[in-house]
Image (cartoon, rainbow, N blue to C red; front, top):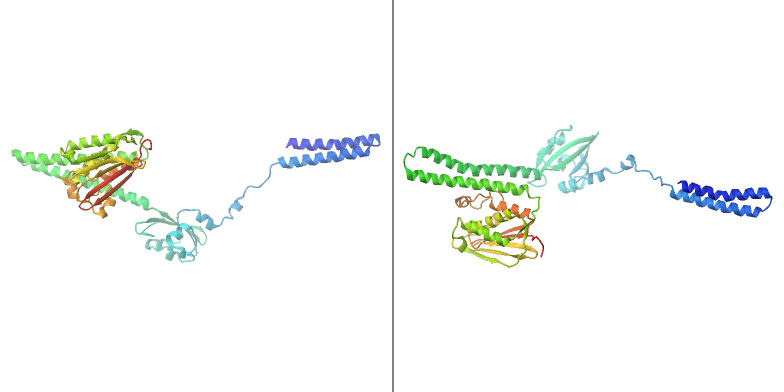
Length: 398
């Protein structure tokens, strides 16, 4: 700014000097006039330079300007359903509310707009009471929390917060605890019962040995259940941390078969391998991927026919590593397939327990696949068998 003022003053000096010379000498008025015009031009340039460099004083938007935003625009900026109620009728409804309740709710009685028994009493109460829970609004499984607040005389704001995910997680936790307790209670009851029986068995060695064998089997069943629960807990705790070890899947197939053979000596004779050479390694957690292979191979051997073949294929599907395990068994009905990865879900509970299953094997597989950013697919045909396919990203895409 000071540079511009200096230019203004310097532009005026020739004009003043020219006038002074003309006055002193009494002549050369033409030179004085020329000097004056030049000085005026310089002054004008200096003035314009000053105006150009001066900051533009554009006022900031005031609170009053911001207040000119319409209530409808403000409500539409909120993702949750919101209703503005005037004298008991819907004056405004944002897009989320109209999507949930319908476009017809505008100007409608709010008790008709929000058709739910739990909402009617809360909307009829003029006070700002606690939120109420609405189950089944919009869809049977949806859970909403409705709160009502007075924002001005005659105006009330209704907010609907979706709590479906929170409720589903809570129900899942309750079911999990109930199922885990049931799974542990059964073998515990068996052990306690046989312990009491042994107290009265006397010196009958055969009876004592039979009961001890049953008790040991039930104790091992509990141990497997606890081990699977701990594995599932560890996998879930690490699900947001991507694994980065280099893992050769073909090696894991061999190791898993060796582990299975330790409890089922006929396993190797029933397995057919089809593994292509020079597959890239996977980026993964070696321990978890070994557990994945073991669970899937073990399931195929257990649920397939005793004289059936288990085919294990390891190849590529585009850029993804593909593990496919197919058994020759009774197959699984289509209605069961979407639920196979749920915790403790069993198609045939008595058969599963009879062969030592905990009901957590495929749930563990699903969580391992998710942690490794892969995909899991289960297909089955009655009387033919079941095929489980796992796609995993390689460490270096091919």
